[in-house]
Length: 560
Image (cartoon, rainbow, N blue to C red; front, side):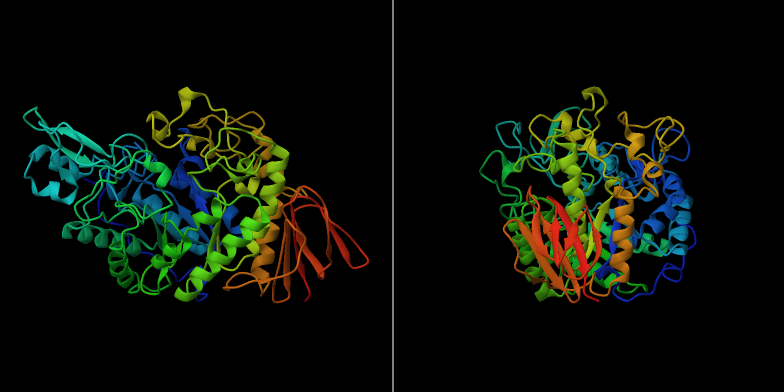
């Protein structure tokens, strides 16, 4: 099945060359790399692992603790690598296993940890098990490792139940059997090319425990678990009884999401992880109805962190932000897990564009909005996020203040959801445009051969080269913020904030000698000067113990 030799290179001493700081993950800043859009080493227009490796010093200097790599496994790329054909091989477009080994070694030598994506809810339809299941026909033991079912209706012409795909349309596809007749249906919560595993079958669990060990032996420091809430389905696969099911996601426990059975899987996985030295971690992508249910995934014997999607979806509004911050900290405290905070990722419109538009438009937006306003709010939101207790995630390019590319021509789009009528909006390509490194060049330093998605004119002025050393640039703001966060004892890990009195529309909290004030209003506000200014996302003025904080600005003070 592998497109390369299945034996891994010799294991690295995974933690011998990175910081031995205990509980590093409780206050880590983790940088998400989307490999196809980060750096292209061979000029084919597609980012690759060697490209990432050459840019590791940039990430070290930025000040992050770990790098999370989106999938680079062998894949037909029906969903940008989230359809895996071989979990133990690197897709040739990204390189080889030797490239992965070199990347891990170099990262550790630079003091960076590597977290890789794991996709256990579904495989590619080109995965060997699934190909054999189709070829062997009804009754094949391989079909038991997926969800194959006879259809309803007189001739089995209707799907087995009413579940809808996240990408639109039915969550079932009917196969043509080896004899050419219409046959059984298989479940896919995402694209038809992504059949869901049946986690009730013991072979599935055996396979993924082996996959975990393969990459842990390679030296990775952890796994981000894709669709961590989706592996277990309700017994009998019951009808949901409603249409437009996407509107229900995040509001209720679904028969195919957030089932309690997933937690037994994670307890098994945690025992494997704990066998390895160096504090390896699991991070859950778990879309749940409430942050309280998210906390179930990070109990002491399960996973270490879970993405805080409730925070990501919160508007730039002081009252809303305070509510979700309090609920998050309150939910994580009983299970002893750190809160996580995130503003952007590869599936949502970049926050510099979300905040440029009116509230209520969701997390996928095809409107540029007010670019200046969006950037001002994005910078302020970043300082707020980095001041909160716990761990923070940074999506590649947000440190450059990149907006979403909202005007990509339809003919260049590659998001599979875009081509499925009733699914997600399908505009995820806008946040996946390759990032700019230099002011000029065929792809602004991304590579010598252009880029797989077109970059907009003017991209070069947002590049790393253009912003490096430029006072007030967004890149320098991130660099300084991460340096201050690392050197300030009252920042990072923790489970509480002390809220301070503040005008309406303003958040103010204390953490020891540190104070953060975030003005989410459109007007300047007067606040007490809480000590020495450490950092501000905009220019403030201070007179006679009072500070004037501009609109959409966050300030860090210290009394130390």
